[in-house]
Image (tube, rainbow over all chains, first blue to last red; front, top):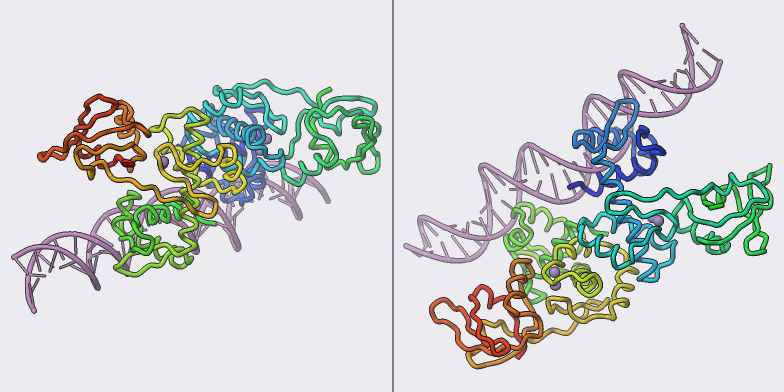
Length: 217
Length: 217
DNA sequence: GATTTTTTTTAGATTTACCTAAAAAAATTA
DNA sequence: TAATTTTTTTAGGTAAATCTAAAAAAAATC
Ligand SMILES: [Mn+2]
Ligand SMILES: [Mn+2]
Ligand SMILES: [Mn+2]
Ligand SMILES: [Mn+2]
């Protein structure tokens, strides 16, 4: 049994690690959880004592198999709840993240199994992120950041790497929702902003927006 | 914004008070929350400072209007989640209480409004308890405890005053579920056990079981 | 009404999750 | 490599929610 706080630390390490064996730095965790490095160090010792992370002083932390399982369980719950909120309760995709941050800590195993079943075992959440199965397994999506596309190339929006309400509302307004087909016209040398074709309409987005849009080519 | 702990104290006072103006004793709260009287006294001071209860030393505590609103909101959420678990996710009535104890603390107002709507604005939960509307209002049910019925009188099971899994499983086994029609044959002078007719079948239940069964005559 | 019992509060600790400020280690730059 | 900057840890402290043990008040009993 972990506290909400412990679960949030494990999830942060999970999301920050690009490869599973990679050590995640103290400051990176502090930034993500909006806390102080000293607090992170305290928690790292505690999680290491519990066998949930490997922690090496001045190097960082990485999840043990037990810690990984816990983290991926939380991610699974988060994403299933987001699907429920959108599909069943008609939330918009920009309204679900904060509620799911609370719901992901509900501990009942039966609840999440039944929810998964009720939703028809969805594979992705409203932001295009894959939903791990109960064993923590899921297929890796293939995508490139919109900023990495060559001018002239086309693709489909399959995900976003930022879940905040203002960002998603902005995309909604532009019509850049999941499944939208786009073609890159030009990437500005000056500020990195991207001009693209969305259903024959020419739109311009800033680099800051483009870098959080994931494209399947 | 209250902590889970504060919410649980307010709910305990709400459930323990028979009339709204009645002061609830420190020990009663401690018993219900499985904590110590000293801890309750600490929390009473805190809740009084926040204006959620009236607290009189050596007398007890009662909810202020603000505290009552908070408490009844939690009860509303608890009962709506129980309906969801049973109606939508096919939980049994004995499996829902502990999960609802966690879910009742999820704070989103939109979530609970949408859930209410999705469920079709149910008026009672799986144990027959009334669900307050968003203003905290609900109709008082009329019922008598099964132990108060005269031999010969009939009625329908409309509720239970105990939500534990073993108790509800026991009732399930006997066929004493919500809506069941019963007639009292005899109440034992010796141990208070009750013999009753349930769909023409004669069954016997102990006083301890009977006192938690609520009958509509 | 005095004595005993029960209930409640106070005093003083503990644990968890934080914090700031200072010290130490590692990484970067000169 | 020496100096500087960045990162991380340690030291020491706070607030919330808990506890035990002792003191005080209220209620029950004699
Ligand atoms: Mn999310
Ligand atoms: Mn998501
Ligand atoms: Mn319940
Ligand atoms: Mn109930």
